[in-house]
Length: 215
Image: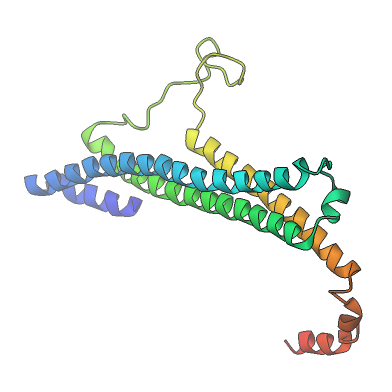
């Protein structure tokens, strides 16, 4: 994209008025589409927050129903004693918490890409029409005016979109660990109840080894 606009700028040295107007129109459209992408970023975040909130609400409501009415503490030993269907339901709701959190992370990354795409167009075109307005920002090295400490009331140039992305990644990791926690309990219960019998797989160790070697 950079080479494309540089080439266009070289050609614009003796360009017609119509060609210059097209470049200015591209510059203005890049600004408009960037603002549109930023608006979509927050609209999509609100959209996925609704799904994430519904999934976590369902999960913790189920925990409250399973443990609140029977005067049982929420612990690994008590979870292990739950009926199979109840434990499976907890795992399913935890999976949806992870799934929607993962979708939120991917949505944030996609939105950030398109925002940076149009910012790249603006960077290449703004010098020609408005100067380095978009590139010039306040110097945050002035400690009297800016401070990076979260407890300070002074401003700082934190990236709001990056903070949102960090939040989404943290939520995705936490919900994934929660899902692994329940699936781990289900797995160990299956082993103990002989639903999963590893002796069968041990008898196939030579066959599996040959298949892997050939593969």
